[in-house]
Amino acid sequence: MAEQPTTIEHKAYARVGLLGNPSDVYYGRTISFSLGNFCATVQLQPSDDLVIKPHPKHDLVNRLQSEGYYGGVRLLMAICRVFYKHCKENQIDLHSGNFTLSYDTNIPRQTGLSGSSAIVTAALNCLLDFYKVRHLIKVEVRPNLVLNAEKELGIVAGLQDRVAQVYGGLVNMDFSKENMDKLGHGIYTPMDISLLPPLHLIYAENPSDSGKVHSTVRQRWLNGDKFIISSMAEVADIALEGRTAILDKDYAKLAGLMNRNFDLRRSMFGDDVIGALNIEMVEVARRVGAASKFTGSGGAVVVYALRGLLK
Image (cartoon, one colour):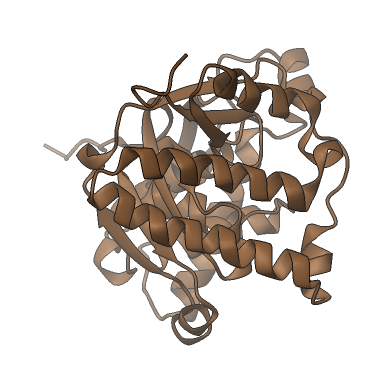
């Protein structure tokens, strides 16, 4: 009796940038963790033809309005292309079988929780298992493949999100220029997630209303702007201090670092770029004495209600 084709399924979870963001794209450091509340799921079913299915629960009008013409389909197509190219360039042989890819996700869109990269990460894991090449592609390299797939689609991002989703759990990341130039990736160190205190998430129902003004921070950094360079270095140092605070369970220190992280970001990017809704989410938490900062680029904030600080 012939062996029945086996469906491969992988999940990748939403990501919270706890400290150090956005210094990951400026040779900095970050600490991030994956969030079990929200995830993207990708299924790979062996098939005669190569098929990539759109999201099954969205009708045509809603999908075009919320996700453009392709939605997650273009993400799946991009990682297939990047994966194949990487294997070819590194003499990794792939068998000739075809498959059908489908996806689902409950990660809120445009909330800085890395919904797009979750779909790509889950798909990459399916490809690794389908072709049985997981042992040939180092875990440190996989976030680069996810990022490259998104770059092909014009998505501007850094490695932090993809590292957190590839590794899972709580991860300390060092993106120093020396490591990036020498290794092509950062130094990623998993940490014990049970060291974290209870954290809360606030995210916007309609985040597209916020922060529509284009940022000039990247260009200013490239131009050698001393304020941006020194501020981004301080953001990276916050992650370094934060690692010690987490290991020591010094949660008062952690709260101060979270607040300082957002304040530095605000001073660099300005209120017009950050957007009124994003600022309000941070300040809602701070008004009751909690620490708060963006989880990513805006749309959601991570909150720590330090016992004894609450009014």
